[in-house]
Image (cartoon, rainbow, N blue to C red; front, side, top):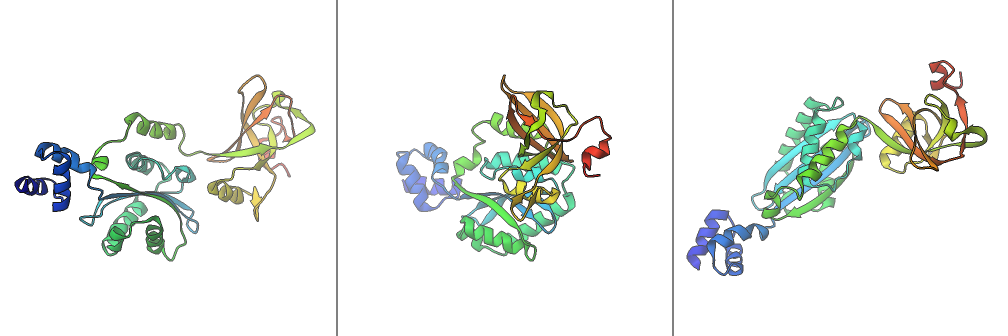
Length: 301
């Protein structure tokens, strides 16, 4: 038994107590213990998140994977971009999917390769000088540490901290198809931000089935996400928390059923609004597509 404990410790770099437990569970079968010990060793910690730097109007994704036993950084990848669509991603996705997504966004037009690399290198050094992250790896402490890292710039951080055992870390995601789907979905048009909006109706307005691409309608940006609030404020659709009617050009109208139409409107490069209206709805128009293009974009001229 003790010889197997010694061999298992040498083979897997585990502690004596961990080796003894693995061998006991494997009924002293060394080969089986080597295969199963990975499920016992909970020493991997994945920190997955996103951040927003309001003063620089920059968005970022990051992945930090720590080995809490050896106090080493196994993975550290970041991307920083002007593209707000990046911030729409959930930090709760699989760490492997997030890693691939970060590399994907590094190829996006809005990314900042030099700035990304600079932050990545500085963060590695920052973690090396703050070893307490390996002992106190809860979301509150990590958020505080990252906030301190970006100081004096203010930063909004959303992260998920996940503890993994060695076997979980070494295993690829449940489905490579799921991971690939995330990338494919972004490849459709990663530069666009889709906002939930309302198109203002008018009993004397134009019936929805008679609307055309290029018509200008009044809209309200009703999307409740943080990124939507920020963009709405940026383009004039929100002031002091109150929604402000905003003209938008109809980009696309699609019937989704016998009684429903999906409307897509255009605000500015990269910002699209979407809503669904019932058949028979009458919409308030600002200008029609028969007028000059500049009248559609600046209807008060």
